[in-house]
Image 1 (cartoon, rainbow, N blue to C red):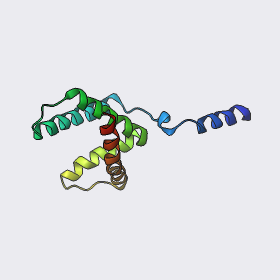
Image 2 (tube, rainbow, N blue to C red):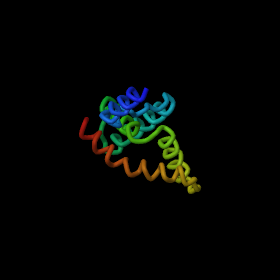
Image 3 (cartoon, helix red, strand yellow):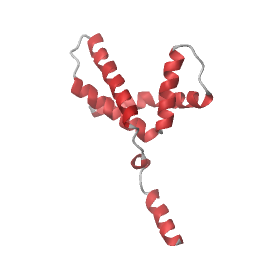
Image 4 (cartoon, rainbow, N blue to C red):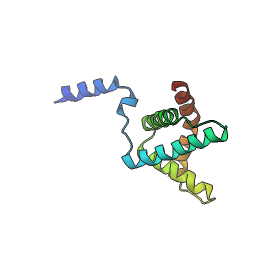
Length: 118
């Protein structure tokens, strides 16, 4: 019985952590993609460019995939909610604050990786 468990542990040690990422729920993905696409389209318009929705969608999908590889769904939802709450100058709990700090630290890196990929 110990041999199969040791074999499984050994095999899992060779699997990159990204392969163990759990996709977010359809609802979380939908909310993120909608907001990201609207923000991307607005950014194009602000810069007096016609929005390239294929490129925006590709970028949004890339960033979402990167967040899924790095943050649990719970962390991501807590961070996103905390971000909205803080814009209203309301306090957030310590766990949400920690998740938000993690999200903020990742944003630049994720954005740079996804811009380079598109």
